[in-house]
Amino acid sequence: MKLFQCSNCNNPVYFENTSCEKCGNGLGYLHEDEKIISFPINSLPVANPVNKGQALLYCANYELDACNWLVIAEGENTYCEACSTNHMIPDLSYPENKLDWQKIEAAKRRLFYSLHKLKLPIKFIIDDAPFNLSFDFLASDPNDPNSVKTGHNNGLITLNIQEANAAHREYIKEQLSERYRTLLGHFRHEVGHFYWDVLIKNNPQNLKEFRALFGDDREDYGEALQKHYKNGAPDNWRDNYISSYATMHAWEDWAETWAHYLHLMDVLETSFNFGLTLDPEISKVPNLRVACDFDPYDGADMRKIIKHYLPLTYSINSLNRSMGHADAYPFILSEPVIKKLNFIHKVVHL
Image 1 (cartoon, rainbow, N blue to C red):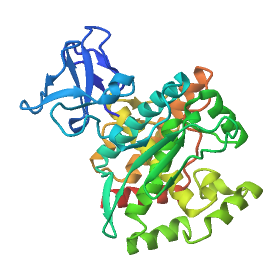
Image 2 (image 1 turned 60 degrees about the vertical axis):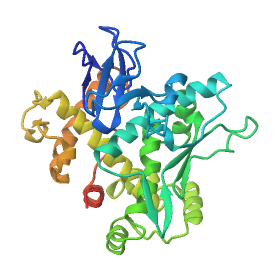
Image 3 (image 1 turned 120 degrees about the horizontal axis):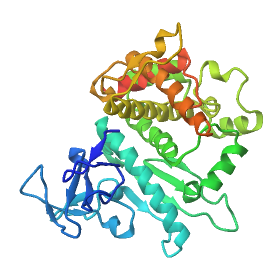
């Protein structure tokens, strides 16, 4: 992700900030122009510094402490692009639901940042019918914790809001022997299913290449799911897959790899904007010496991206271990996985 600063006092700020800690100005994110706008607190609407003829207001979900994006004051939609995709949200009269939902919306906005950088639309016409990205954020029945399952169906992504609860998420992570489980990871995975329908399903050439790399999508999904949870992943899964779950079905291999594609693009863009250079005090390992001197969204080839990403993961993991945390990126990018990432990179930029 880019770095942001208050346009009033130049103080560095985060993507999620609604106010500047240094000068006290209000802050809002202008999605179309990838800018943080600074303005005197309580002075909305404000003039759009990019288009002087527009006045800007916060997205309607700002009033619920769930969004810091700006919208055109006289526009038809009072919700920003990210919030307008909500089909259903949980009952916010329960404080725990509201807190979970706020965390979910924060993660979703980071997803939309990446989609915008990749120039990926969220609305399509397929077979003469609308095919749009939308979200249901639902709470499980207290008597049936499995009543809401996270998944994707025909453009609609459902997320169990318990995934916003760190204790619950860690419990599921341990139960499933996962090495990584985050809200942002869920979004990146599930949106991969959406873009499989858009980029692969109805494109004969892409579908042919997909099947050569990921396997046959026509395999019965229900049977594959039962087999996976009964037998687990094969012992040598790391040779060809990014995760054990990716071995379950070609669709899941695609979605898992897609999520990692978004991971590496965002990490590398952040490193570029920080001007990171790695020159470790370790002898005879020249491939750890890299300068993150390019924006991965500007058309770099995947081999160059991977060459810079791998040393970054080693450094990030080392920093995490220094703080007593688990590895931030506990994965191995084998050659078959890199080929899958390269395919995704290609179809995204077609």
